[in-house]
Length: 485
Image (cartoon, rainbow, N blue to C red):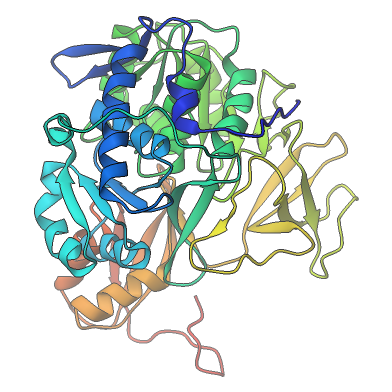
């Protein structure tokens, strides 16, 4: 796999440029009606938004926060931010008030574009950080008098997007990617879908890397049409109906969604042929791999990826023979290695080590917002451990830090504990609890009979997080007084 990185590159411009401006860029479906958008229509609106943003900030490289469900205006605004030479900061609207506030206060965006449903709760934060705030549904009226711009001069390493994720500490980390991320993700995406014609549907939330970069953004770069439609709540039969209704050929679904279909769908086998099933965010495993193959009639393409860098490993029928239960092999052109506790590279099959990515790879982040990037001789430790066999297939072992992965979301237990302590007025300990559908949910252990905890977690962490609450007499501790999770 060859990486052809130009001297100058702008994500927005690359997504818009098309030899057929009247060609279909994407379809938007709101559950009742569908709207089709060409590259020309997308270009006109996006350039206007870019001009508006440029008129509102004194210099490029200002941060613009985007908090909205997937709608056309969200895509136009993303592109407008890149055209103006500024940095987009997408945040999922499902986040609770406290998690949302932490991210906003840390990054202090100059402009906030949010959905009407989130406007009220963001107004006070906008005042606190002195940001201008606009509703994204009204973006066309907001920018009506703005001048269109073409594209600011940017380079592959110019910061383009900040995506927040939970680190091993309780404070969220802002992962910065340059404009090169679109090139890198598109090259990998192309290998998976290059000979397939038809609509692409990525069901993931656009507040996370998966929602933009396993479908819409690479699709626009490669000039492949895609569908924007997000269910208010994932419904397995509705998802299958949408795939058939819109003749979807390439679909991205995280493993949790596949497990829900496996468990709840009334179908024994899907009677419509998709041509590529992409999945990432959690470990798939042999059982789900074999079920997906049987149900959809094709082998799933599983990616191992992080917000910081990826995908770097794939179990892909487009690259090599998939091996059920494995993570797959290293994606060609991506530098990956395992290291032991002393930092020495592991070359022997079967030995467990830390998964490391070369920070110089086009697929890697530029760094963390407001923090020094800690690397070991140019290699970034992902925090995950694995081993490989004598054929080069990797096998996932687990995380070294305390992050809990539930339904594809990474949650810091300490962040949840801090919120419960602050807003429910009680102590708790959060640990992972195995779950048939989501792999893990949060188990909240508390010594108090406190009915506020559930309400607080839903409001300040978010309603998308599944959890259980259990009363305990004491928290187990080490001899030094630390909680034994």
